[in-house]
View 1 (cartoon, one colour):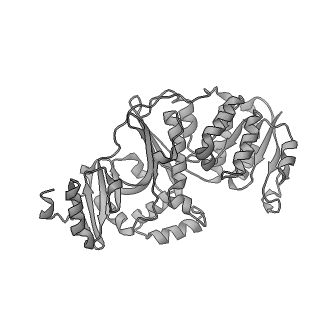
View 2 (cartoon, helix red, strand yellow):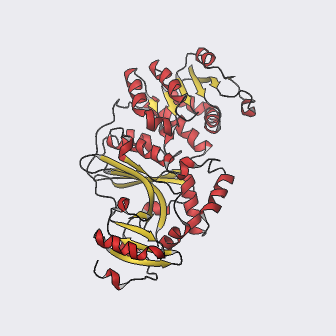
Length: 410
């Protein structure tokens, strides 16, 4: 009989327990043997959530270790420590560990995969990216040798919900953030979501699977949505663009680079239609053109389901110990950007674009300022708020422009 250990019994941990117990017969049939959840390690035994659990619940690490000869560990506590120490302990014993801990995987994944390889086991992290979307094992399995030139996605449901509400219902950033907390989409401290950390962890994990190497932190730009002003969203909407927090990575022919940043998407971009708390991931390559994965990015049931399916996938599939190096050169993902200035900054901004030989395609008026579509992809060098534009810029809406003769010589 398989013996299962569960570390953590919060939202995700309780979801794993419920998923395993409610589908026990089906899981046992797939595994070809019976299983039992032998013990659960929790931080606080006083919490009432474990009252109806039919197994041993303990706060003592040593007791948890001694309660069974585990065949698999489900880690559902989050953060780096003690999750890293716990995970390392079991991998070094040759026991597989399944996790949903994106921060741990992004920061310590190289070490933990190495520990798993050396000890003849595996480290499963399907649920660490996009909750219920089966992207990790698709890359490990069906797409194991498929060349990938670029991976991009909407990887954070909280920010996507907020931006969707701001665009579709013309609501303010502050108002939508308050509601996101009330609905449980955002934490009391939403820093990881708003500043792009959550998506940053996830795109680094996806990059490892797509390009065969763990990226350095320095190679990945991170910019969240906290500095977006409401009128920036309004201007983009007038033109026909949707603002999204995009995580992406691509191979430029020499190295893999990536970023998490707000970007405007034209209507013909598939990810533009990913709304609310839903996540979407796009894979691009010469043999696949574009594959799109869309589904729930978080939630108790979706994440727990991914963890259980991750275990079943590894039990039924032989995975190469090292991810195949399959990257192929991709093109610069955007060639236009949307730059925002206040009315007082106009003359200074005109001087800047002239000095840097940046072409202005269109300018759009708002009572708080102007939005300029520029051809330069050097938005990171701009002294003004500047967001990449993905998709066909020529398909934008025809709205009031404020062209000036001053741009004629640019």
